Length: 351
Image (cartoon, rainbow, N blue to C red; front, side, top):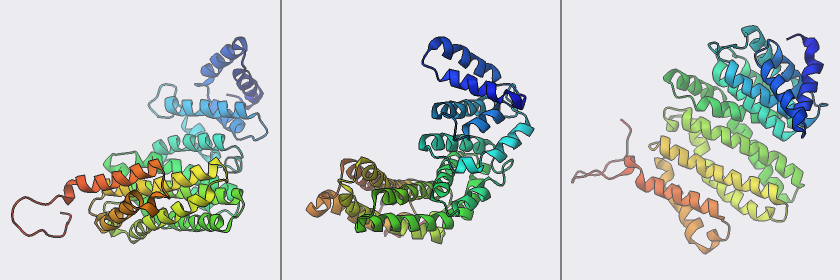
């Protein structure tokens, strides 16, 4: 598609956001026709990354792009996007405007879009994606760091879902290369949001670091559960797991202080706590032998918060369910069951 058609595509996207069906339907049909035109997705990228264009138009552009990736990105797809255009698109998807996206909903869809392509192309056809993202994570601008974390979260989520042996090995290599860095970033933002809550800092400041801490935690959960053959053999993974329950305790105390600060920061804090319990459940389910040192702390944690007056004063329903799921997981774990017979019980070991 000739670059001069930019204005025509923009106008068609505008009409496709109309509430008038007589305007909307022809525009949607035209966009569908353009899906197989060379250069169409390059124009969409230019539009979705232009902050001066109407939000609804940019939203539609990124959704059209996502649909195109699903249908036409694979080499063997009918009317597949050319390798030359793919290369141009990959280079443009981490441009300054993408990493400075001011609208959270659009930033999320852009991150999903990048992760869809990465699942097909990374690392073979997009080897610089992870290094470029890590570089962006070190940027001094808070927004750039947040958007980079958001993209990295969806990238890790997409790559962790691949189950072929070769793909799992690639994910393990990725984990080894980034785990310590993400762990340090998590510690940094967690310390900041907890301190800001305790000191009564501005809600915006609390939210900024809480959002980043939650994204880091989501990344760490996927890396820990799916990125190690044996999590207990990684010093960084063990260090992370050893602070999970302590962070949950402190966060529950801080949750009390967030009441009256608005719904959003309170919900964020609750999500953060729930994801800490998800880390425990994930490791228990996938790495039961790595979880052995955490059995006692887990049971003591659940006992305090579910069955003591002081603990019950701090909790909420979903957290209680997660605690009981941890206890249930420990009790039902096949690797922890006592052997039949009269032989002495030994320490659990992995064969």
